[in-house]
Image (cartoon, rainbow, N blue to C red; front, side, top):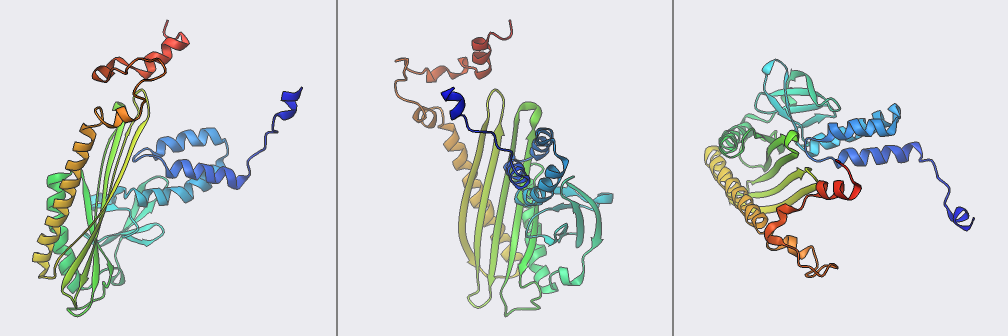
Length: 308
């Protein structure tokens, strides 16, 4: 009787609480997996109205933060969905083709395109720098990222007609490798802000890299690594600036990728050991030299008497 009296009564979640929980799951889905999460979430909620409202709010944020790439109709090209290319809530500029893509965020498709207005495009002076940098970044991405996509957008001073004013370009690089049949997905996202400072004749370069990986075979392991960079170079002609910026980006990204490879090659010897006691409760040392003998699924099946 005492136990029954101590039990707390079940409380029904409010509409807003359900919606916020649903949004949290959608927004925290690993790269390329939001549709799998959405499908399960829809079944669990059993409430079409809550799900639809949560999806309408979460998908645009997720798509922009993951910088997803969508193919435009009639093979007009590809557009990267990001806050840097956003014209309106559902419209995104592709500066390379001077087109604006209209996007359905929940379906993650581009429904149609329209020519960009003059007000949405940079001046001829800015376009000279943007075009030259875009060409160099495309060359770098094609060499370094299989199926990687990139874009260069002007986010400040796009109406500048000539020397004498500052402006800012943003380089976006996004690449995904999705292999759910092999229980792993991964993504690379990098954003580089280049501030062209006319008075000091200096380019201030700030970069932000984010690498994600999700392995879910016989377990659930997720990597979310982030790194910020800062560099600079001198203000030169459009072509010379483009080469200098691309070399700086290549240097930092290659160096960071190499550091990740070194760090994770040391996981068995360092990190994994630090996660456990030197001598567990069994008083038996863990056999680090032969970790493959352990299988989460096999041990669970053994304990539960499954598979017999």
